[in-house]
Image (cartoon, rainbow, N blue to C red; front, top):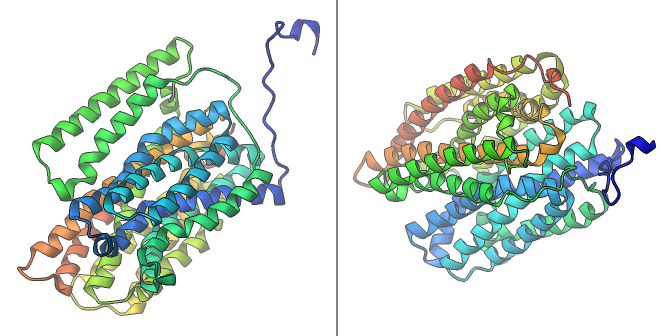
Length: 492
């Protein structure tokens, strides 16, 4: 450094974050953060399948079991953006490890819950821990891989997102039915503990530390506005089945929109003054990021609700046990695994084509399933497997590429914040999908007869969900037309 280049006395020059050499070290680091992401996504859905067992064991009311499911999503959604910015400023590895340790402890406390109130409280704490952990994944991937290799890493993350959405309902059912060590539903939380311990031990050795160069103070008001807007928007949606749509729901939704507008306005003014907001609205000017967020809402809005309703149809409608339900849905996972690698390999040449093809394949899968179940008979395994395999092929093509395109054009200093926004949008999409399509499904199934729902009732309910979901993915394909032609158009 020449004399002219030296900083003023007392000022520290930010040092570049260490980067792992491509190879075993980077691969192990990727596995650590992917395991953590998988556990988070799993816990967002797994309780839904275990809910009847929780109700029976803890004598929980309908409202309490609703809060058990909602508390995690609400706390997670409220903490993601703030968690991303904290990681950017204080160190992504540090906050990831703190969040992972908190996730492990709160999972154990959920498993030890003696009453519904304790379970609800620990689920909220578990969501907050995940809110600190999850946004660091994107920044750690950037610090672990060279620019040319990040697409594959983000592709692996996208594949894990899709697989976790599938595994949640299946693993929940299998663990409850297995009743390991007589623990019943509590095993869905205990399983997080050994995985977290292993990830903590390995992560301490292999994860690189990285942070944004700036040391600006945390935007506390922006963080509060962001969390408040997400809470106000998600609460009436998640509670739809319990509350219905009353004037309270509309007031909360309107308040959420107003607070969200205030948040964006405040952040824009803060950025204009040269300060660092918790979320820089300038990110929305990046075409891939803005368009990808819209596509993510639609895309992930259909996945969670589809597998929730399909699992209930297969188990309660056709009488299949949990393990057989897993065998039925297995072709979806296999199809996703087959095309995930192919999609990542071709993303630089035909990213948009693959995205649209994937969304259309899922729409076709939903329509084929509609033809299979609409007559009210118990469909055979191979018919279901074929339709689900087509959907899996589409998921593998679209999910990994979508993540790569959305994040590829985001500056490295905003990686954590952008990752938090993307994860928040995915959570909102999933919550809205489960709330809306889940309500349609259960209302149709239980409202068509005076007695317990029969197979024809579940078939009618699933048929409606499948038609709506197919339309959802057709709209997703249209939105994807606005995305760049390939992921290679965006480089850091």
